[in-house]
Structure formats: structure tokens, C-alpha cells
Image (cartoon, rainbow, N blue to C red; front, side, top):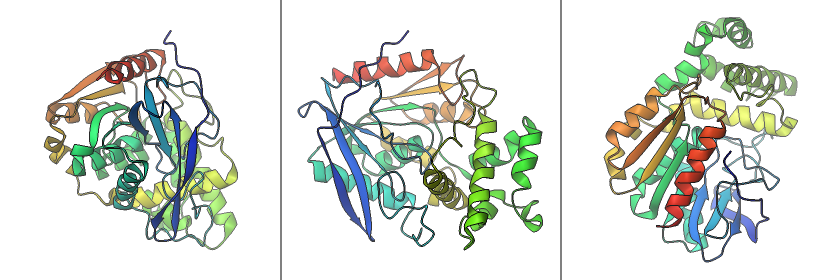
Length: 320
């Protein structure tokens, strides 16, 4: 069994004014003189965990930064508030926030760690600022192409027809044959709080269903959030995915040559239904310095074997 490092409290935290009225929460753990690393959370809109947990990072060797992306976690204004505008919450804003945070903390380069949506944001940042990235570790690779979004919210429904039918019936009749993600995005902007709450519950039930067949898929993994966190998560997810994350289709694979010289480890579960392993395979083919590890017993929610590979990669990079 992979032995994680014990949890530690942050030694520094704060909020960073990133403009447009947004304050982004951040904190730092570990060795103030250690190797800089940034954890990029998923979702989009998940936010960082509120409680310290065992970690794959050796806090004696790493200086680990976390941040809550715009509109979620402890960042303000919060997307659960219907008066919070989503106009200034895009992939390009988040990339700029990461770079501003790096400058604020005085780090020359940092290792980037994160999976799922976090991997998309990591790749987008690293392709724009490759000279600021020392290494990358990604468990669960996605590039948020429109084809991947369509698979997650339509294609994989062939494996979960009952749950997908409920998801489809969560939108008005006129939208059921069209873009379900865009329809949910509209529902999350409805002035009626009951409409927004129901849409969030229906969306999260679908997310739960997609991971339900995985060896480590926990019941209600997505829906077991506080009401404000539910609303923010779904509103941000639908907003990003309805807009294709403001990325040209296939842009992150097309521009992967920008990652040349950055060592990377891609760790992906073969049983990941929501984010099939083919995307990780495609990325490894075009990223010159990436190592792909496919974990046979893991889905999107990970496994002990996947955790061991993450631990090995971070321990290896700690020595560089």
C-alpha cells in the first residue's frame, strides 16, 4: 500500500486580488525553502479541500501551493450567488490568475499537479508559460475538447441509460434533443432558486452515475456537498463546458510541442468511463517528454495502484 505523507496545516494563506472584482484564495504548506509545486483542482468549480488530508507530497521537500479557482471554495464572489457574474470566469482568466499567483509568491518555476479539469488548466497554462513549469504530474487526463464534453454528457449514457434519461429529463422538453450542457447552463442562471437547485441536483446525480461502476466509485461522491458548493460546482461546470472551455477544438494537443523539455507523468485509469484513456494516449504521443502509465484497476476516482504511481512520480521529481 502506498504510504502517503501526514497532513500538515498551511503556514501561509491569503486572498489575491486578480481583478474584475475577484479575490482568489490561496495557501501554502510544507518547507518554505522546498521545491515549489501548485495543486490545480478539478471541476471546474470543485474548490480545494477545507481540511488537511494525507498527501502524496513530501512536505519536507516541497513547498505546496493550493488555490481556489474563481467563484468556488473560499474565493469570492461565489458562483452560488446568482448575482455573481460569470463573464470574467473563463479558462484564460484562470491562466492569468495562476501566473499572477506565481509572481505574488515569488516562485521562478513550479511543478504542476492535478487531474480531470485540473489537467486541462495545467496544460493550457504550461503551453502558454512553459518556462515557468518544472514538471507536470497528471492523474486523469482531459483536454476538454467538445468531443470529450459530448462523450461525458451524452455518449457515456449508453452505459447508464436510466440515469442519462433522468439527466435528459432535467431540462425543458424543447432542449432534450439538443445541447444538454447548454440547457443546464441556462437553468443555472434562472432567477428562481428552486429551478437552480433542482438543476444542480440533477446534474450531480448524473456525475455520480458515471463513476458508479468504478471499483472505487463512492455513492454520492459528487452530490455529497453543501448546497452552496453544489450550486457553484454545477454553475461553473455548465458555464465552462457550454463554451468548450474557450479553447479551439484540439488546441491543447495541437500545441503540445510547447511542452518540450518539461518532464511529465500521465497516470490514467483504464476503467475511467467519463474520461476515456484515449485522450491520455493521444497526449503522450505528441508531448515529447511525457511518460504514460495506464492503471488497469482504476477509474476516474483512482485506486491504490494509481496513488502509488502518483507518489512515485512526486518523490522522483522532488530530487530534481
